[in-house]
Amino acid sequence: MKKYIVTGLVMMLCICSLAQTRPCQINIKLNGLKVPAKAYLITQYGWTDSRVIDSAVFKNGDVKFKSQTAEPFKAQLLVGNSPKWSKTNDALLLYVDQGNIAVNGTDSVKNAVISGSEINKQYLRYRATVLAPVEKTSKEVNAAFTAAGAEKKKGSQFMAEMTAKLKQAVKVSDSLKYIYIRQNPSSFLSLEALSELAGKNPNITLIEPLFKKLDVSLRNMPKGKKLAEILYDNGSTGIGALAPVFTEPDVNGNNVSLTDFRGKYVLLDFWASWCGPCRAENPNVLKVYNKYKDKNFTVLGISLDQPGKKNAWLAAIKQDGLPWTQVSDLNYWNNAAARLYGVQAIPQNFLIDPSGKIIAKNLRGDALEITLAKFIR
Image (cartoon, rainbow, N blue to C red; front, side, top):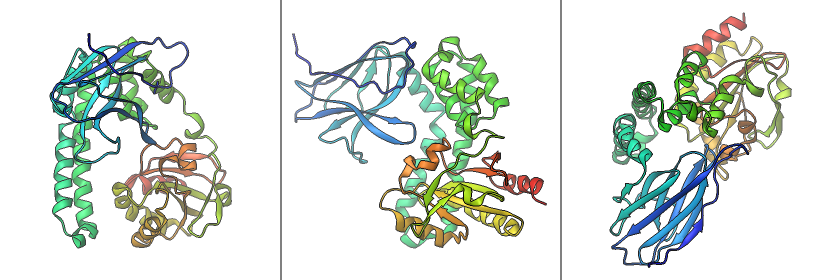
């Protein structure tokens, strides 16, 4: 009888006390593994960070992970001497689910075969159809960036073209997600896709009917309950709510509070120097700012730049010619204001009236100017 290295997989889901959990187990077998290696199970917590949730050293090519879970979750199985990500990593994407999952390969998990898991079979089909446009375009864009010279990469036209290609691919993929959800109301992947489409500020008219058609077992899962909360509870950042107050340092290190702008229309603009879509949207925000800046309107930029990247933030402000107040605690996705407003994707914005109430959000392109024209005469 072979011995396995058995470790306890740390629970990575925020599950309410009434959620029913069942055992899950991953058995990894690499018959041709000839060098000492370690297996890491890595997952992403929202948009904040990726974490190693368990790890174990191979013994005779075997590793086993055990845990309890109330719903499937996506994870990356990485084999090597470090969990640090690189393009050459030996890694496999899979769903951890209730029951036994077998991962069998030779000396690599990258091409290993997953068995004993229906959701992983579904995901292979889902990835080959629904996610194919984005994956194909991402490879093309990465290849274009690799081939482009330094000067070309700095050019606004090149960035705009790459951003447009990705946006179009995402649009096609989103359309395929809606089709998949309608055709597969009992699949956990449908719940996951609908949650992605909904985001933090869903189109209730579009999302709610699809949510109601999902199997009741999916709606009762932690992810289903979380989506229900988003759909049926505006929370502290809904339209009509008093905008949560925060204070962060500006480019000179001076503290700036949202209350400093009381009495004006303020567009809270969440962005970052590293965010291509944000940079592409900046000219539109600048256009609107110049049009309404003398009509009791201003913009307050909140950057989600990373620790130690202040120079990149300042350079982006200068390059994009942004004259309004900019603040950041340089804490990436853990930015205090972003967490307060539930920001999980950027660009994202909130329009606040002179009394401090949120009157609109997620305004891009022409929608921003049209909305401002309704409120500011």
